[in-house]
Every structure is written in C-alpha cells, then in structure tokens.
Length: 345
Image (cartoon, rainbow, N blue to C red; front, top):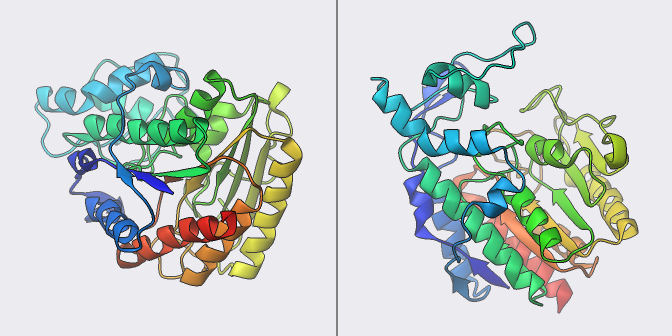
C-alpha cells in the first residue's frame, strides 16, 4: 500500500488548546504525523509519495465559499485587528441568537464559523489544510486509477468540518472532499466509514440529505463525548438521504468485542449499499491509552479490524483522522493498514 505524505503539515503548529478548563499544548501536534511516517517506513508498508496540487475546486464542491475565504484570511485578519496569540473563538450564534448576519469583525466572524473553542487558527493553518486535502485527493486518485488501497497521511485531520464550520482540530473535511471527488470522477456511490473515537459530525452534515454517499460512524456516545450535539442513533438522514446516515454511539469503557460488533454491522450495511469506493476516516483514538477517549482497544485489535475492512473487497482510501496517544499512534495506524494488506493478499 502506498502512502501519500507532505512535510507541509508542519505549518500547522498551534501552541495552545483549552482542555478541561486549562490551557495546554495541543493533543493534535506535528509529531503525530512524523511518528506514523516513521512506522510506515520501518515496516516497509510501501512507497511514500508527495501529493499533487488540486486547487480549490474540490474544496468548494463540499464547503461554503464564504467559509473557505474566512479560513484563508483568519490568521492575518486576527493579527490586523491587533489581537495577539492565536485566533480563538469566544462567542457563538447560540440557540437564542440565531441571526442570518455574518459579523465583519474577526472576533464575531470566527465565532460564526467555529463549532468549539479548543481549536485555534494559527499562522500556517490554511496552508497545512490545503496540503492535507491534496494528500487525501492524491490517495483517492491512486485508488480510482486501479490500486487496491492507499493511505493519505492527512494532517490536520478533517472529519469534524461541516459545510461551513471548523473545529475539533479540523479545517477542511478531507474525507468528504475525497468522497465527492470520487463521485465527480465517475463513481456512482461512495461509502465513508468513520472509525475515529469522535463522531464525524462534519461528514454527516455534508451528506445528510444525499443518497450517493453512505456515511457510517462508530464513536463515543455524544452524551458523554465530543462533539456532544450530533452522533445519536436516530440521526438517519433527511429527504433523499434518509437511511444513508448510520451512527453507532457506544458507551464509556467499550471493549473491542462490542466495538467489533458495531463494525460488523457497519460492514454489512456497506456491502448491501454496493459502493464503488470506500473512504475510511482512520482515527486510532479508540486505543485504550488515548488521553481524550474512553474506548479500550488494544494494538492488536487494529490489525484485526484492518482485515475485516479488507474482506469487503472494495477499492479503499484510508485517511488519517485522530489518535493522540502519540507514542503508539504509529503502531496502531500502521497495524490497520498491515491487517488490510495481509487480508487483501
């Protein structure tokens, strides 16, 4: 399996995050991608490629143009306003302030486009996000051109980004961009399986009213886990999309047996859907030692579920999402890919 990677991810190097009432160093850090790359190389997973450049057209196919423009200028607008540090939201259009007006001042504008305050916009964020979606698209094109599978070592991640909101360490929705790209290039149906600990609220939002993308997410129950306000089992899609959005919220302390049972249900739904292309939002923060999750998967479990995904026999694109037990993130991510390769052979 070939891996797509770029050093441009290092341009996203935020210094602060709000976590449990304190300011900490971000859990989502450049070292995550570097450790995974080291593991890809040491395990001889396959060739490592640089991404091609795709411009903004694939981004605008799934994201609001005003939102994209905001991301491009956010850091410079923040500095131009005389603010220090990193751009961070501190106010939102809440349930009692639902206005159609988008503020012009950056303090209000970032609140309009942010879904949470934990994710800052730092200098270099936009460039890193553009490079990350290029990684995703290049990996997708490898699969569309006939390769069995490819790994997009995306950083920053993307699955929390909705049509016009960022957060959860994410700025552009790599999985949604990849799925739409596959459809644009001729696929009839795409499936996106999100195995990150956190619900893929952004991917759900983008495809919620569509039947040409089946979205499935196995995640921590939002009553107990970020992003808290989406990811319940009754969210099944709307209009043409009804029945094509499938959530598997699982409780604190979930072990692999319970998690694998949900995976098997998801794989059965994907098989019945008859997709042309499978996109995996590969978050490995389901690991038992992850600092911001409550699942209990062991490292060997990742190899096992990689084999299970391979059994679908679908062209498969793996795109990195979360995983914050940094010293084990390379082992766990590559275990999935090796399990897939072993079964595919």
